[in-house]
Structure formats: structure tokens, C-alpha cells
Length: 437
Image: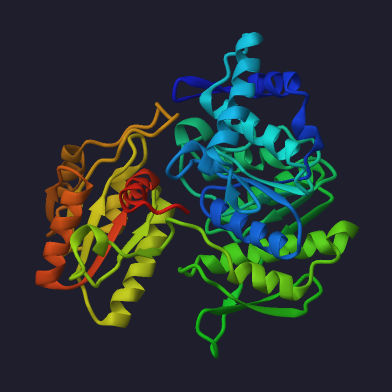
């Protein structure tokens, strides 16, 4: 049992809540996804492949982007405000009537499962919130598939102070006699631990995914060998080399399902290709036009990426370094805000280089997540100065001020403009631009 932001990580309350809600999870065919990075985009790839194959899907992703209902989707579309409020009210009444005392996160998970069951989805794609073993989503006795994406350092206070300990917590979603897909791992200790856990638990199929490879002939296309060694090539719409791992994981997962379960056998290679090509996942290496805020004279789009932990920060910096080399430029202008409790010092160390500029910012209070707080801008300034690098750093009064400052510097000095550090900062930008993903 672990404490997280004012409540204890335990499955007791979610089981009680679901029991009194007539156990909707027992009627769901679930694909359950844990990991440190890549869970969201992997779940989106799988969702879009299944949609192209004419399956009705439910998908739960946390944290939400702009509002809690964003987390719950049917066929890729968020639940409506009316349906969310109605369903959440049902779950909240159950919680109150039975004195369960469920957390806001547990209420959200139960709301999603109840709605997926009510909508009779063919497949529920569920992303773990924190860890795996004691996460509120982990109530499926026999998921049709468990997936573990890339594991790195995050939530050490909950999951343990070693990659092995963190990996064991993530592996807690594996179930006996069930299939598991293990994504390519940066940390060797993670792969070793996950393999051992799969053996100990008695998973019926345990497949370690090989990364896809970029095509040398077609820009933006990647190729992968399927389980029967037949190659498949597909267009990858999301940016970043790490999408080679995420797409490979999603494609391998679908390939395993269609080759082991009759109801998925109708999925074709074209369904897979079309699904990958049509996938959207906001906030990950995404270019956004901010000219509506700053005026039409702004032609350089803002690159946003919610790199909130060291592994994500390294992947973002790797992408930027390749971008700088390609454009033959050196300077990066950052807008940065971070969540308190993250390894922000390490992230800043990985992201910032001599000559960069940074606007330290904050983000708004996050709806239904009172435990989330942003770092003070003064702390970001202090930690950046402790790097002893030549970085031009300042603070902003608000997001518009930050954008004005950063583009003012860009107009004088050129370079690349990047917003990062927290998904909640990106959410403020989406609300400001009235973007509804």
C-alpha cells in the first residue's frame, strides 16, 4: 500500500465502488497498458487500428488534457459533458451511499468502466495512471492483452528507487494465462525484470517487441516484421524516433490478437496501415500555430511536448538536436513549467544548452486533481542557474506574456521555439487557442 497525493494506493475502494455499480469491468474486453513513457500514443495507435477495423472502442487515458471528460472516449471521441456529468453522478452517488470514500481518480476510472459497459464497446483500451499493480485501473482478471511500454524513472516515491522495483510495479498488470506485449526498453534491467515477471506470473504469450525501422526510400514511413516474419510498411504521423517503438508495440499487439483470437482475425494489413496513419495524439512533438494570439506576423509554429520526466526530456532533446542540425541553427527558446514533485532539475539538465533562452512559467489549477501543483517560477530560475550554463532566463506573468517574450526573442535571434515540462501547461495553451482534441 502506497500513499499518493493524499490518498492510499490500494485496490480496496475501486473494487467496492465497482461492485456496487454492478461490476461493469467484468463485461469489458480490456487491453491494459502500463509503462513510464509511450502509453498514450501506443493506446491511440491501437484505438485507431481497431476503429479502421470496424470495432467499437472505449479508451481511458489519464491525466486529462483540458477537462476530466477528455480522458474517456468512445470511438476516439470524448464523452459529452451531459453524459459525463450523468454517469459521474451515478458513480458519486454509489460512493456516497456506501461510504466508500473513493478518490477522484477512482471515481473517474469507475465512471469510464460504467460508460464503456453501458455503450457496449467491443474493446476497452485502458491506460494505467500510476504504476500498475495498485493502480485503480488494475481490476481485470483476464485482460485480452497487457502491454508494458518503455520504463524509466518516475514516481520513485511510490514505485521504488530502482528500475527493477519500478518494473515490478508496472508488471503488476500482467495476469496468469493472459498475453503480454513488452515494448523495446532503454533500460536493460527493465527488460530483464519484465521477462522474469511474465514467466513467474505464467503469461500464455510473452512477446518482446523489436523496434520498427525508418524507410530509407519514403520519408515518414517505417517498416516492421510481423510475428510470421512478413514485413509491413506504414506511414507514421507522429514525430520522434521513439514512435518506432510505440508503433511497433501497437502493430505487434494487434498482430498477436488477430492471430490468436477469432474475433480479431478480420483485421487486415490495410486496417493496420490506415489506423496508424490516421492516429492523433496531442501534446507530443506537435507543432501549433499561435498566430491567433500574437498576430499573423508570427510564422514560426510552436513545438510542444509534454516531456515531464528525465526519459521524456532526453527523447525531446534528441529530437531537437537533430532538428537543429537539419536546419543548421543552434538556439532554442523555451517556455517551461513543471509539476512539483517531478525530477525537474534532471529534466532541465537534459534539455538546456549554452545559448538557450528560457521563460519560466506556471500552469492553471488542474480540475479534479487538487494534488497537482506547479513549481514556482523562482525555483525554476534557481535550478536553471545552478546548471552554470549561459542561459538567458526570465519569468512570465502568464502564458500570453510568455509567448510574447519568447517570440520577441525568436524574431531577434532566430532558432526554434519549444514549450515543454508539463501536460498541464500545454492544456492552458489548448484552452487559450480553443483547441478541442
